[in-house]
Image: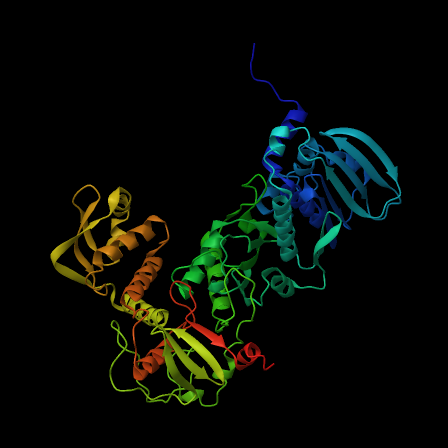
Length: 584
């Protein structure tokens, strides 16, 4: 007598539902994908109590004929593919034929559909996966699916649902994702009788990106080797504490992918070595269906690229182009995580279009910061601000004062700029150190008297595993006891007294997996060098020192953010000042 048996269809469907249908968000995702595959140009989602009570999705797609409507609830019944070869290049969003039977098995479902060109449509009702009623009658072309009492027959699953607000928020993000991925389709979301979200087909992707991110994002597009990328990014000071405003879109679908997110983070790290929080981004990719395997996750949220390195490089390059396309100074009224009272400063076009810019040395970032041709060169790395003879003071900006021995006040074209001297010097030293590292490698200082560091068992294990990477960072270290490390050589740029502390910081970063390659390692080493060696707050500077610091800052590649992503400069316009004094 055998103990293995084939499960009844109703049980198999509920098992499948456990993989495909986790919460109202999952239902909405599957129904939206079906609507898009049906050629819909308008999709409406209606929720009651966050979808826990009812979910209704209506579309104006091609609809289904009677026979197709009856077959749609059979497992693995699909119009999307027919052969094994079709799986190698799936061009539709759905293809498995599992969503509708899985949803029907854990809900009370009603389908109303009419195929375009037919006079009558089909209305069928199901409860727990069992067909209860089928009628035919006049209907508008398209499909409406109502899903009520989700998990009514699986009370254990129902208990795992969150609050109404949380479930609604998840659905709203999913609708937003597909609205961004399909900008030629109108999407509307209604909750408890009130429309809460709308994306008209008249709104293209740039407008939808602004609507979602709440700001005017930087944009870049790239097309190479069969990969098309569009990136909409906000600068680092807009980072959030969660990834709720990170949207990765691939061939019309929303995905979660480490290749895309890793490339995006690498681009942010190139503009600011350390990133706190989660950047707000929308990244849309279009590739040939044969380049991606979408059949690696139960709900198709994860994918596998067949040319992963090409995708990584394309996304990273596009994001870098977007980040550096905006040379903006944060407004003094910007407050991270709170309602923003002002706006970002305009691009530095007024500086860059200065007719005297040809006389300005330095990088493209600094060309609009008008200085005389014979102005002093940037201070040599490392060290503090130079005490040498005054550089020529540019006529277009004026150093006003130092506030609290920490902030430098500068007037430029009738606007007040507040510069944090520590992070400004940190940016200068970071770029100088990084340039020196790439040109000559990380030089070492052999210590006459070795230093010891109490790393503890965890960081000592990091050294054991990543010893070669630590050696490339300029350290020669050996383990001499239980968590005790002996340092016999250190990077030439690390000041005395900070050798052990810098090593422990480096080990912690490597242990967190932040160094994907030598480039990332070098950037982190340069950031550590900049942070340790930069002048600190509460350090008095003379007028010549402040002027030299500002000049050197604007010779850097990115003077607006420190290596940790914090703003270096804040701006207060004359108009903002006059509003504060009630002059306007």
